[in-house]
Amino acid sequence: MHVMSIEELRFKHPRLVYRSYDVLTDERGVTITYNFLLEPDIWFHPTITIPHKEVFDSKLFENFIFHMGLLEAMSYWKLACPRELVIEAGSLSSTGKRFIEDLFLHGLGEFYYANGIDFTTENFVTICSTSEKEKLAIDIATKPIDLVLVGGGKDSALLLSLLAKSGRMIKPLVVNPSTAALEIIRSLGLSDPVVVTRTLDPKLLELNKNGYLNGHTPFSALLSFVGVTVAALFGYENVIVANEQSANEGNVMYKGIEINHQYSKSLRYENLFREYLHKALTPSISYFSAMRPFHDIQMSKMFSRVPELLPIFRSCNKLRAANMWCGNCAKCAFTYLTLFPFVTYEKMMQIFGDDYFKRPAILQFIRELVGVIPIKPFECVGTREEAKLALLLSLKSYKQMGREIPEGLLRIKTEAGLQDGDVMQLSLHSFDHISDMHNVPDEHLILVMDAWTKSQEKQ
Image 1 (cartoon, rainbow, N blue to C red):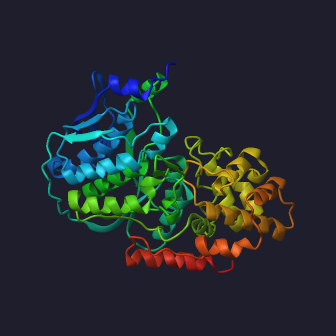
Image 2 (image 1 turned 60 degrees about the vertical axis):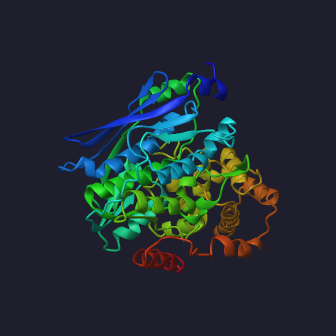
Image 3 (image 1 turned 90 degrees about the vertical axis):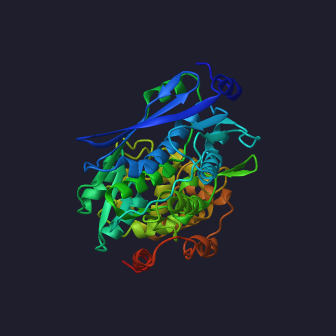
């Protein structure tokens, strides 16, 4: 396979045109087909299907539908990084252009880093719209229902559990759902989730195999637009996600910019999206992360108190389709590391199958997680500080259980320059600290803070 250079690709494909979209309503619901042209002659037609079967005014919701397409376009633009992204399918105001340009800069940072692309050059990508007319945000009649995005991992499982037990009116939302996500929903006694189906154009994968560029896109940003579109169609008041403050920490500096795998889960993105949502789409719907006050390790502590979900959740992305833990990735390593101090050894073996701390591959990822290796894994994992704390707490757990500590863990403790006495200092930053930098409404904040308080009580 000939891997084409960025210069070759940009010369061959000068523009990606977001030409149009088609809306079809049938027994499945509303299917939107997006039409993108990678000039000169490659067409893409990805789809999003929302199971909304009532008659609706597509004109009223066209701005939501149009914006979902803007996020979808990123997956096709990154194949060749053309110099221009041309918007013909709808009107993108100057405010909208700034929002999308910022997302291209920060949301695709990992893609640029992985492919060695200098994205900081002047006019690296120009976004132009054939219409820049400012569309007015519309008011939508909403019901006090929480639309909760569920992925199958511990964070969204914890959030859904807290909301389900609170008596609030909630509706789970899943996009191309995993087995774990559906089992979590069922186990909490919730029925009839909103199941959105997203299909990529198969030509995307074909081109990847033929030397075109591939890499990470800000998927959670797409989910934020899908979420508010679903909420608008059904008339739901809140779109709630489970991103923690840990998501704010980047992985590496590149070309003077912090590269963050979790950028579209960060507070910075959440704030920009909320502002844009209310200005450009609707002020009637609120989008926020209910778990933002907490670090990932605090989430693990709270999740350990939800025993019915421990056997069901799956945070591994590698074997998501098979509903299994691969036991050989950074996500498995971090999840195991942060749960170990709070769950019995026997229960951990039931969940994961064996002791991951005895696996050389997992130990190598832990080296990266605690900063022995300077670049943090490009996965949805917590901060280096809380990984260090989890390591020390895990060592303490082995001692309390009277079990032999895996030699590899002790080596990493030494390599990271950690002492048992560091627990108190590390806890100040990542275990005892509740952030007040969030957008959580009071009624939801009371719920999550109550869960944290209860998790501190002895079982």
